[in-house]
Structure formats: structure tokens, C-alpha cells
Length: 551
Ligand code: CU
Image (cartoon, rainbow, N blue to C red; front, side, top):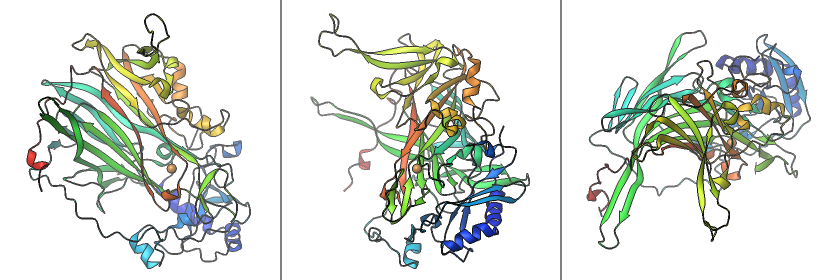
């Protein structure tokens, strides 16, 4: 059905195999490259476009980039149109195809100050700034959380931190202490899969549609934050443990970062009659990790807030996967970023697997659309609208899309528990920025990425159902995972349900995303919606005035 994910070993092997191939060497010489020492070969999963890609062999289709020194950004110099097919298990180069020479873009793509200066390539827009004064976060009494092994207590939140090779950071048993009782919300939460489909049909880009979890591994590509830190303040680190290629345990130091952040105003009111002001500042707990998948970097950030909100945010950064074009041509499926260099259009889709347990494991899903009412005696001026709930009772009904016109969201309810106004307690899943995929309905790559066909899927819990695109997406023909499981059409009424939310970042690049991309954010919120009897952050103490009135 498929092959196993790429390993670190595959990266080294692919580079060695291809550099030794005479057909590849000849194609490089045609492009004026004779010194192969610094040339980069990036293995790309083969995908499955035709039966040549069948998983009877473990295939790879690497791309070539020229680096002129070890510290240079080779992604600035893609070798366009030079393709190869490797059999990773046999260690054979099966084919090398040269679609014709397109000049390798020459402009440097350095992004470190040292690199830019050493090369004498500081761009006109990147002269170093010198006017930023220090900003220091101090917590003289230490952070407000307590850690016991991998269990965390912060404010009224209780949870456990986990980690897997495939998903990376996982949250377990997230609950909230309400009047002395620990109430469950999430049993387990992770990014179960992701895929980055490209919208460019030219030979170097048509196959780019990588599942970075199932074909590469989010956990195995995690950053160790020992060499430079991403967070500011009093930081607590968790280590991760992975199996190495020989099956031995390998500790990744400081793989997960946890700290508190001031998040501006939590709530405020000024009584204009009395002039009295009540304001509270928001503190949030950040549990985060960064992963590097060859050129691109992803941060996975979970935030817990004092008002019961859980936020999942992916930060996209790093270096885009580029193409080269003939001078004077306008690429039809990408954006020009530097002379001769363009970024093909693409999207990044993530699937969050949310095994919810709102006040217990038996939950029910309700879709809520806001719908304007018809004109009539009850709505004479056309201002009326209602929030209309629809229960999603079976898996066949629970394959849904966002709808901005109806401000659609979904509630996860526990019908066995009611709040003080008599409604079932619930959390709502609030979509953030999101997008539809751009595939033709018959595209083979869409079949492989079936989970992006809808934003929301709900299944009845089954232990074997962990990854949205199935267990082995590498070279899979498609159909596995969510689309297959929901054929069982199981009941979702008062059951142990799992919510799978697909969210996408739409990337029509900007020249400002080059040579390294400023972080762009995508994600969603889980918010209490009748879970509590009122504002759960009413009990937060005011901050001391000296904190805002120093001079
Ligand atoms: Cu992107």
C-alpha cells in the first residue's frame, strides 16, 4: 500500500548516488557546474502520479541545487528541469531526465548577517539595524507553572506533554480545574498529518506534494533548542526521545519549550459615569516546538489562556522551494522573487487530530450556522438572524467545510452535563484563517491527500485510526485514512468522538518572503462555549499600577 517515511540515511544516500551518476554529471556540466562538492541533492518523495510510482519499489525523485560554499543558501540556485528517479533500497539511479537548460539563477540568497557580509552581498534593503534597545523579560519569582516529569500545572490548567517521531509534540489529558474539580477537555491532541501541494505543472514542481508527517516525520525533524533559543523569559525545556536508525534510543535535548507570555489585555471596562477602570492583563502558557523539513521550517505552538481558551498555531518560516525561469518569461504558476528565480504557488495543509473529552468521553458534535431570517411580520426590517444548530449524527454527515458567509463553527457538547442555564456543556472549534484546496477533483495527488477534501471530519474513536492520510502515505496511491474510515458511517451521538480539523495556509509568495520567510501564522481556537457558567477569568487579580505607570 505504501512505503516507509524518508530517513536521515536516505538523504545522504540520495546525494551520493546521484552525484556519482554520469548522466547527472553531464547535465550539470551543460549548466556550467563542474565542481560538485557543495552541490545539494534534496530527496523528494516520489508521490504517485502513474503506475511507474507503485510502491513495489522504494522510490525517490530528488532535486538539485547549487551551493557555491558550505554556508551559502543553495535554494537560491535551483537546477531547473533536471530530474532523477532513484530506487532507495537497491541504491540505484533508475533514470535521469534533462528537460533542457534553464540558466541557474545567480543572485545570492544569503540571510545571515555574517554570510551576507562575507560574500559582499548585503542587499540594498538589508543594511543592519542599530537602533533597537534591549527588551528584557524578568520573572523574579520564577514562572507560575509546576512541572512533575511530563505533567504540568499552570493556573487552573492540568495536562501532560508527549512526543512521537511522526507527530512531534502531543498534548495529553488537558483539563481545567473548576471550583476544585478537574474537568476534562482534550484527551489527546496532535498534528496527525500535513501535506504541501504545489500548483505548478512544470517538470520540477508537478510532483511536489509532500506529507511532512507520514513521508518525513515531524518529530524526527524537531529542532534541539540547545543551540539558540526561540523564546523569551523563564523557559522550561522538555527533552524528546526518539529511536535512531539502529534502533537505539536517542535523546533530543530541549525539543519542547514551555514559557509564560504576557498577552496584552484580558478584559477591560471603563465606567464612563464614575471614571473607574477595571482591567486585567492576559497571561498565556506557551508549549512549542520547531521542525525543519529541508528548506521549510514549521513551529507548532499550543497556547493555554486564563479564560479557558486553547489555541493551536502553526508558524511557517524558513526558505521557500524555488524554481528558475528563462529571463524575460513570466512564470504562470508562481511569483518572481529575484532575477530568474520564482516561488511556485503552493498551499500547506495541516490536520489536527483532536480526541476531545468535554467533561467526559461521550460527546456529540453540533454545527452552528448563523442564518439571516426572511422578511415578514417577525422580521419587518430584515435585521434578524439566528444561530442555527445542526447535529452531525453520523460520520457520513460529519465531513464539513468552513463557510465564512454563515460564520460557521462546530460545538463539541456533552449532553449528559448541563450548565447553569440548562444547556449541554460544550467547547467550540473556531476556524481561523483557512482555505480550500486547488486540485482538480480527478487529481491523483488529491486522492492521496483525501483529508484535505474537507476541513472538518469526525470519527468514532478507534485505536488504529491515528493518521489522517493513513499509516503509509509514502508512494501510496491514495484512499487511506479518513476517507476510508468514514465509510463505516459510525454513530457520533453521545460517543467517544475524534475531531479532525484540516487547516491550510495559502501561499502565493511575495518577494518579501525571500530569501527567508517572515513567519506567517495559521491555526484555530477551541473556546469554552457554555462549559463555564460565566467569564472564567473574572477571578484574575489586577496588575500592580507601577507596571504601567513608570516614567
Ligand atoms: Cu509556503
